[in-house]
Image (cartoon, rainbow, N blue to C red; front, side, top):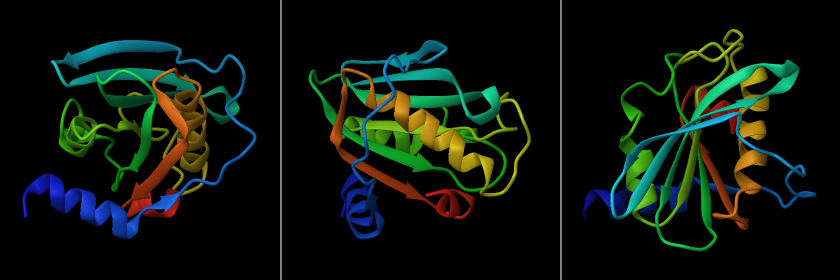
Length: 157
């Protein structure tokens, strides 16, 4: 079994669908977007956005370059050191190559985000704020959303 097949199998076994809610907030947008990688299959952007209390949070969006609305995968990282080696690669890039829009939040207090790590409290707000903005984008299919997380990221999901 190749790496991508293994990743997709794990996702199928451990993922959970995000319930269909009232929809993204009108006018939801990133504060900043910086393209950090692009090839003929994937675009990766470092984004910032506002979370609860007006905190400025840093995150990453990896998405396929296939046109149209694509399924969204929220990946909540483990640990308390931010995205680390996943910037511009890792699972985010692999899933984008498979056709997903992947969003990863650096939680409050990580990777230059404002605030302090709260261990599964405010970080939940950070991820939900990022998801709200992502679902307002023309490349995201709001009807197909999955969230996964391990360790610290598991208690956030």
